[in-house]
Length: 217
Ligand code: DX5
Ligand code: ZN
Image (cartoon, rainbow, N blue to C red; front, top):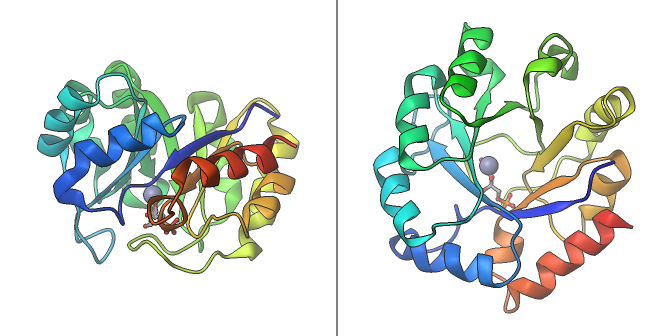
């Protein structure tokens, strides 16, 4: 499997200090930043949208921005996110009736394509899109909030994808910490999102190193 990358989710951080938080994570060795966008429809919570991302990009020029789009009709925000500086656009399979159209738009806008599924969605939905996407996101909590309990019973989904697609980037998101990383690593995930475990840590670098080391073992 590909080398493991660690992407802190800044959802649970002090969002009024977003640029500082992001730069602090990068200085502490983050491989990418996972930015959670919520619209109050697809999930019962709200965060921020492309205007904030555009401002943030000026202060965090070089980081890989993985936009986790927990929004209905994700195809509507593709161009705005691209011009605001997003690197990867990770939408939810459940959120659009035109998955192919959404993927095409993301490509045309020059971003990498991520597609995610909620815990209740079967992993087989990836099979017909696998040639067109760069990353598959397996949620290990119901999307909407940080700090929830890791769902270990999602690991067979990761195993299914890793067995079939050795080169695919597989991201895991929700409740990932030094206590649960071994399960993710054994199943075959290589893009590791961790929110509260990293941003609330006294030493975020140490936690990210630990996650990376276990994942690459
Ligand atoms: C949940 C978000 C996650 C979340 C991760 O809806 O997609 O990215 O912030 O936070 P933790 O690691 O605390 O579950
Ligand atoms: Zn997320």
